[in-house]
Length: 525
Image (spheres, rainbow, N blue to C red):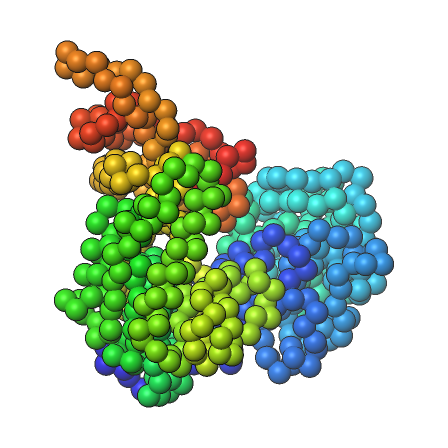
């Protein structure tokens, strides 16, 4: 790809919304919603200093929800001076209560708690925050405390029958607050509200786009690495694939990708990865594919406990990577597909510089490198996929579903054998093909076939069979912390079942898993 001269930075200095996290479960979601408006957004702990905030010069600040009460001694808080910086502030749930508390309002335990979808009455439709929102709108509430009285100078802009201050604002000082959560999809017009805050209140132009991010990041990587060597442990997943392509476009043959094929990938995935990154692919990188399936099957022989299988697969991957990395010798940079949720979940303060011989993320400690390169550390998963498309990575890799590191080893109940892997590969391929063919995959978070350890009597033709049962699973989820079972069209399940029992040797029964998370996990192990 020919790089164009562009002044846009991968981390814009002029248009950024800052999210201060008070322990809310939706902190990442707020950032994603802001970015959907083409405005860059970062999440930082609520302890971020005023000096640092001034240095970052955000166009706006959002205070998240949180589990505490603002009036307790140990409550997470911030300096009241935050509201005097002249920067627009939006407080959400706990953030709204904190704003009220610090500015002289009253926060107390609500006579009636509100949880779930709630009808909110908009009292001031002239509000910049609530412009275009219906007078009666459904919002997501989740609070025990409430703002009993707004601070002086604030106007109440929305209410419910049991929550007198569902939203408030001091427009002169650019301070806004909502007791409800505009960032969740259950708030029907929440996206309008956040767009209003970003564009109407903060006056952001919205010019942060993925193409400029990709081009600029590649140029930054080229300058950073110079003539150095980089090593990437390539899983074939979305994150590591996009990171590898970015590096390949920046430094070419200075990059070595090690792809460990443990024999537990989905049907044809090993070949698909090699087709992209191997010698016949479009990228000028050193590619090493290690066929390690026999040693993995040997290690897994007779092991039935899921956690034990996970540990064996993880350990053996490291050992194989170790052997291959030794052949390469000294490497300057280690490439990781770290993405922004990883950074947030690890405490937001993770250093990107790791000294030689430091054990990083389970990788072997002998690898000699100076620094970790994480080109995707600012991106959410959906943004990584967009970057992948911008880079020209084939759609079958870009849209690849989340896939556990241990692969199909944990989608086989009981011991793992080559025969069983073949069965679940074929069944899974049929299932994914039929779901995609019917267009039923659009709202699915994850869907796959797993092999149970149940064998039962069946009849095929005039003969008796005693074969395995396949379990199909499909869930809808936005955060993978909770999930609902997807109600797939019966025709799709019927067609899938017919094909599996007819085309996959060793299977005579197909079942559909209707369990949500909780009580089940998304995976099937």
